[in-house]
Amino acid sequence: MVVTALPVVEAQLHQLLAVVQWLTTGYTLVIGIITPLSANLYEKYNNRQFFLAIIALFLGGTIVGCLATNFWTLLGARLIQAAAGGLLVSLQMTTLVTIFPPEKRGTIMGLSSLVVSFGPAIGPTLAGMILNLWGWRSIFWVVLPFMVIIWLVGFFALPAYTTPQAVKIDAWSIPLLLIGPGLTLASFTVLTTQILIGSLMLITGLVVSLLFYRRQQALPRPLLDFHVFNYRPFTMTLAIASLLFMILLSTEQMVSVFAQNSLHQSSALTGLILLPGAVVNALVGAVVGRLYDRHGIKALVWTGLSLCLITTVPTLCFTAHTPLWWLTVLYAGRMMAIGIAFSPLMSESYLGMAAKDISQATAMNNALRQMTGALAVTLVVVISSLPASSVTGMRWAMAVTFVFNLLAIGLFAQYLKEGHPHGE
Image (tube, rainbow, N blue to C red):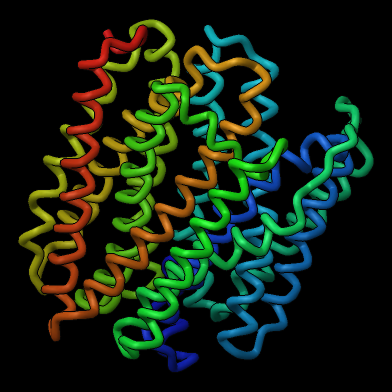
């Protein structure tokens, strides 16, 4: 919901766009950082305890957002919500993959994609309308009663169907995971204004990230199990899916900023521009799951990657007079393309994986996608801020997503060349 609010917050709280974008980038990053904890917490507590704690945490972040009086309190509220969101997404994915057999995973992952995408589909549009009526705090007030209802329903109706286990979480891994990726991504924003400090942050972040990796390799029960990359289908399809996720988040962010700052449209109209694409992405994700179960991955992913490339080319020629209908069509086409390819890639990633590795693979899957998504948004926002013209900045940002698309095509061609079972 917050993506359409960024230009509004930028103006009302007097912050640079490179700083304000952390309301979405920080949210995505925290989801990626908190996700590795999900596999351990899923086993340490039963599903009922875990679910109620997650919703309570999200509820707390929402209340902080309702009462925020400055940007940094607002950012804190978003990060608390992100921590809950990351755990909740992993909880539902791990549950679905564990319960349903491999031959039904495509269909189930497609339906999951539909449900998970429904919020982002209507969120920006609703947020745009709400912003025009009541201001940015109303985004939190609108969500608040729904979260209270969800917690109450869970408290009275959700049964406990898992058994807690004696799981010890490594205390050093958590701060290493927080500091490493966090400093690395934050450094890109700081580098635009303070090169020395930004460089130190980048180096420190990379070193801490390396220490995290080495510690995980030495632990008998790591926070993130990098051994899941021994499954070649998982490694390859996750890399492609991460690139598509980077394209999705970057495009959503930049289209919203472009519509408001370059085309001078309201937040409400910007939400309407994003709506068709988000709806199409959600619906297509549900349909292609069944097609994947029947026909495999090849035709679906080639179709999605090709359509994504085609709809990217015109964005490299945007002007200050680009028609809104054309912007809407291109965005919807790109979201359709990502929807066609994304769900099959997620289903394929678990191909041949042992049941005992699924929860760790899910944590790694979500963590890496969210972290790379946060990196992509930071990159395109920083790059778009370099030229004096916001229109030129938009073109440069879309050129970056074009490169992401080419990399995804190259990786998928290599995946098929290696001859994996579902590749044909």
